[in-house]
Amino acid sequence: MLQNLYDRTMVLAGHRHALWALAAVAFIESSVFPIPPDVLIIPMVLAARDQALRIAIVATVASVLGGLLGYAIGAGLYESLGRPILEFYGQMDRFETFQDTYNEWGAWIVAGAGLTPFPYKVITIASGVTGLDLTVFTVASALSRGARFALEVGLLWWLGPPIRVFIERNLPILTVVFFVLLFGGFVAVRYLL
Image (cartoon, rainbow, N blue to C red):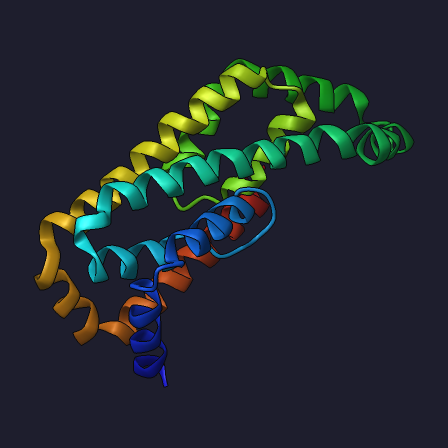
């Protein structure tokens, strides 16, 4: 079953609308969707190595735009939902301390989340909630997401057919590793923030 899903994904990765699908996934992953765009980037680069740069650019631009949506969600819902809850529980002082610390280190926090498997959407929303400077947020997002996708695509392009053979031979274990990293990112959010 897993091999069949992989084969179908590889066929779809070469489809003429694959870039639009990647853009949609990268956009919504940055604000609400739990599955990262890597699940499309990897097969797309392996199916069309000549499109590697375009794939990285589409993923970066869509991810940053989605991050701006996440920022807007954080900023918009904080006043209507977040602030009344914090006030009800008497936690405004603690939040203001957190907000000051977050904004002091905001560029590094955004960059770290943009480069790692840490759920980026959490940081995009938190940046809106804390009112992190929008320019700082956007630049840090563009640099970190761009670096992440460029590195991933560059490695896939450089390794090419041998990495495809490796993935195909080790698909079950790589799938488990992927989901452990994904789950680990959400666990990290729970215990680190």
